Length: 63
Image 1 (cartoon, rainbow, N blue to C red):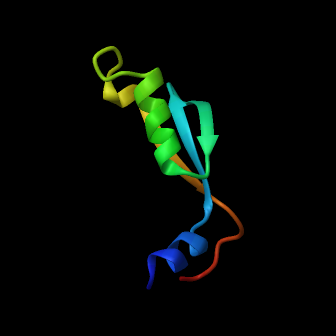
Image 2 (image 1 turned 90 degrees about the vertical axis):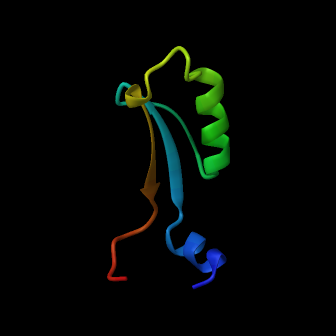
């Protein structure tokens, strides 16, 4: 399966969470990673408080 097909099949929003609260969201994971580095530098925040997760669009179906 091509990367383009996979991206369309699993489209959705990336979420940046801090202490289980949504801080920001984007359809581009690179934007979320940059934002996480800017807002939560590794030297000031433990890794376990920061999470990045993806919420898929659409309905569930068999793969």
